[in-house]
View 1 (cartoon, helix red, strand yellow):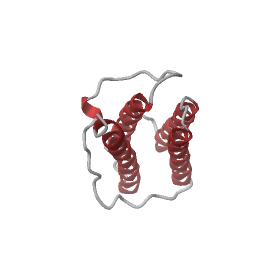
View 2 (cartoon, rainbow, N blue to C red; view 1 turned 45 degrees about the vertical axis):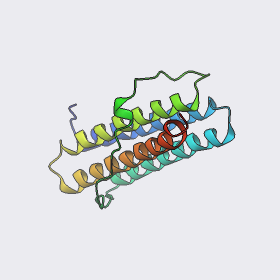
View 3 (cartoon, helix red, strand yellow; view 1 turned 90 degrees about the horizontal axis):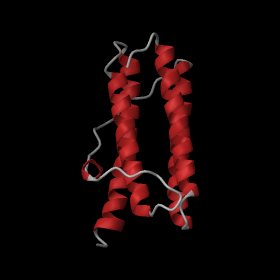
View 4 (spheres, rainbow, N blue to C red; view 1 turned 60 degrees about the vertical axis):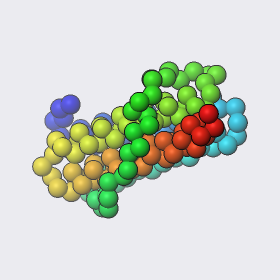
Length: 150
């Protein structure tokens, strides 16, 4: 991943957050139970929030560094990849979401490692931790609703 400027990095990250918001909105539309739909709609809104944070960074604002690293249960790391389909069950939707959040975490971690600007690095590290929180929430949901029920 190579970028010509900070603006290029931010534009790329903003685009990724837009894609993530659309992904969760589409996933919500595939859910047949209202509570499942609400879970994914909520995540879509959080990704929109990330986009707005990044737009703020473009205007000169920076995020505070993350207070602590988020625990990784690594549940999603050991599950087989699943393709999103209109008839997917909640378990599969959670797997897709865990893997998407892990990819987002890696993206922001990698971007953070490419800059010498401490404020920008802290911002991307904070965004990486927010994505790690999302993954953790999906892992906990998977543990509670799938692993414990089986």
